[in-house]
Amino acid sequence: MQDIYDYVDQHAQSYIADLQRLLRQPSVAAQSVGMEACAGLVEEMLAGVGARPRQVDTRGGFPVVYGEIAGATTKTLSFYNHYDVQPADPLDLWESDPWAAEIRAGRLWARGCSDNKGNIAARIAAVDAYQRVRGQLPLSVKFIIEGEEEIGSPHLEHFAEDHPDLCRADACIWEFGGKDIDARPIVHLGLKGICYVELRVKGARMDQHSSIATSVPNPAWRLAWALASLKGPDERVLIPGFYDKVVPPTDEELVALERMPDTESQRLEHLGVPGFLLGLSGMELKKRDYFEPTCTISGIESGYTGEGSKTVLPSRAMAKVDMRLVLDQDPEEIFALLRAHLDAQGFDDIESILLGPERPARTPMSAPIARVVVDTYRELHGQEPVVTPTSAGSGPWYQLCSRFGIDACTAGVGHARSQAHAPNENIYVDDFIRGIKHICTIMDRFAAEPA
Image (cartoon, rainbow, N blue to C red; front, side):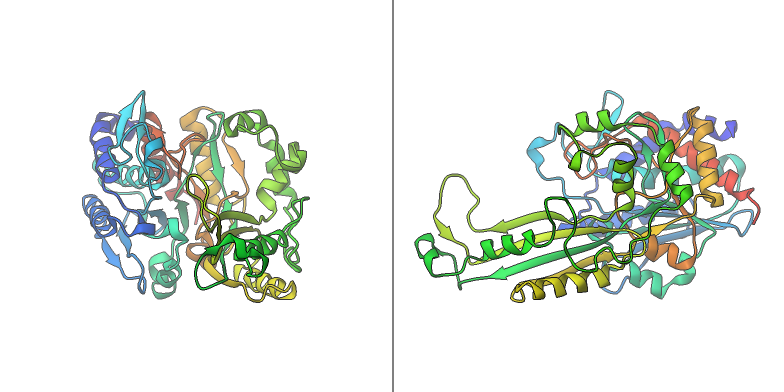
């Protein structure tokens, strides 16, 4: 592989420039900003490596940019990515323009550099480098690059249903990955699911003077009481049936947790909190992080929240709640349980809306693609990767992979302080170049795996 590594090093500046060009094109799905232009740019980049790209309709959502390249064998590796990014707000907390893609002190700073455009560019660059040095890829590859991951991938299921042939592969490299808080390579073999719900309460026709709170219902209080019914101070979710289908970790997965390094002090320092919930640490903390579901208030809005005082009785109240799910929890079933709970508690007047449900998914730890990614990480980084049986986050792993029996695994260019979704998102330039080499090595090694 040294010949390919040398080529990547010799053309590193060109690959970095390609990434900067992609980052300088805003693409915020939540605000419908720059999406058409970015999809076109991704299509152009795929065309540049011979992937014969096209934009695939998703029944009303932003298109999936799809491309494929035939290799020396019919064995196929797919790359799942997304070209949409989070909004850059709050802009005043950025140390440089979030769309400028500046390089400072060995890092590239831009919205989307870690999540997920750095990985898009690294994978396209890897395909380019391998073909230019060896003439042909060692296997066939597919690029599936959607435009709605940051808003819950609401239309990706339509893509999978309408085009199962485009999804089929022998394995998939998932969209994210990188290093943990101690700069060790980390490999995830699954994702939690998610049930994301918006709750709405209506009161008077319009905001009122707060003096009439003696007789007019306050929707903010009503919402607060409903939210308080969802979880107790012991962090236990109080929705009847919520835990009924939770699958505990296997012995093999527990062994993987035990092997994970202790990074608790570093995490606490980075988070700026005195301790973890319930005073947990060690294996109990790890099991909770990776194998227990959650119920979290993501946002609340009602009444007046500006500077100074305004004595108002709000006419509306809204909260967004996300529940991270584990095997075998179904987001549609969990939503139904939530609705039944609210009704039983007397909150039948509260409107509930399900947004972007996703099922949990895991890849077996013995999967060939997992072994290849771990082995190649070890070779390139000179240290043992951290292998986690799943991730605390969520995404459309089930829709795109598990439903088709496709094993998936993470491998990427981010790091624990990349600050994805936050101001000053960043990646190390060296990690980006190493990520290109890693994808080249994964393709080469997975091609040689027995079918």
